[in-house]
Image (tube, rainbow, N blue to C red; front, side, top):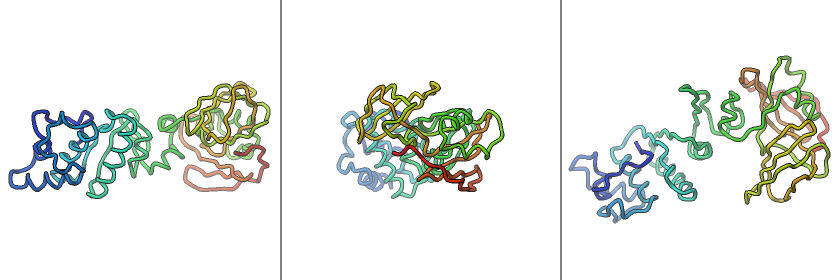
Length: 287
C-alpha cells in the first residue's frame, strides 16, 4: 500500500525503508533492483529528510513494490505534491506499474487524476459503485445524474426548456414522453458562433490554454462553456450557442440516452447503445 502521507520511517535510510518487509537474504538485491526501478540508484544510505517530495514518493512506491504484491492500493499518493510534480509522478508511477505488471487501485477525489491514471474508473456514492467503465465512457455517458455532476463540470437543463432554446435539438422530442427529464451537456461540448442574438456572455475567465464563459440565454438560463483561445470573448458580447453532444436523464436521475449533433445531423443513442439517426436539421451555430 502507498499511503497518502507516504508513512516513511524517518529514522531509517532509504534502503532500510525499501527493504523493511524483506527477509535478510533477499534484501540487498531487491533494494538495489527497486532503487534502479524508481531512478534512485546510489542513494540507499540517504535519510528521508534529505530527499525532495518527489523522491520520497518514489521511495514509498519502491517499498510497496519490493515484496512483489499481486495488488497494490494507492491512497491519494500524490495529494501532498505541487501540480507539476503531481503530474510527473502520476505518469511515472503508472509507467512503473505497467512495466511491473502490478494491478493497482488508486483512491482519489481528483477526477482528472483518475481519468489520466486508470484503465478503468469506478465512481462510488454513499458506499456503492455507481459506475465502473473506461474513463471516456464514465465522462461522456455517466449512468446517473450524480455521476455526471461529480466527474466534471456539467450543465443541466429541463429537456422541454432545452428543446425550446435549441431548435436544432427539437427532433429529440418524439423520443421521450416522460415528465421531468433533464438534458446534460459538458461545457466544452457547446458550439459557439459570434454575432448571434439571444445569448449574452456574462462572465469570462481566461485560463491560459482555454476560457471559461458564463452564458445567459433569453429566458435567464445560465450555461458554463469552456472554449479555446483562438477567439477571445468579451463580457456582454452576443452570440449563438448550441449543445453538440450530451445526455438525457430521467426524473430520478438515470441515464436514458445520449445525443450528438454533427454537420447538421442529429443522432440519438439509447442507454443500451442503440444508435438512431434523426431527420436532418439545419444547424445555425458552429464552432
